[in-house]
Length: 87
Image (cartoon, rainbow, N blue to C red; front, side, top):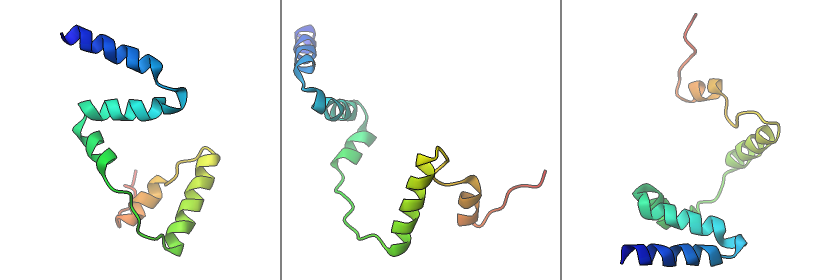
């Protein structure tokens, strides 16, 4: 019976419209990964962005377009009050 069920799933997958492939992939992955399932089920963050948040997001998008890291190693260290080790 399991083989018949898998065959039906393959047939259904072949009939999914192209624009829904990523949604189907995310859902199927969530079935085998409980963390992904929890993320998919989580409610959307509806907290408003502060001016500082909007500025940081805009800067991250600019960096990403230039192919740079969205946050640098130095920025991460500063955020946690750390410094680079001396060499």
